[in-house]
Length: 136
Image (cartoon, rainbow, N blue to C red):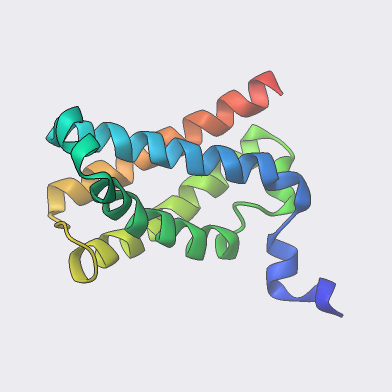
């Protein structure tokens, strides 16, 4: 009975490499963004700063991606199915992340930042998944 639950249809064991890669891709994107606005010295001296950068978007991703189907059986079949699922998951996940960043964590959710996160997150997640299926 549990296997027929909504979440059970959205999570496939074969998607574990995608989940790990997605998290790494997002952390790399967020780290590069932080480095564009801070120095390595600042980030080294304030390790919790990066956690505050990562947290809202990773929380948004972890909450939204499974619901949309980023880790469903369809996501592990081909790039043609996986990339759109990642992008469709990222858009609302980024919105959740921006809201968390604005209301809970330190940081702004300015319109230009929101646009950059929506576009670059889509490109990074879609690009990583396309590469994954190309070389798998």
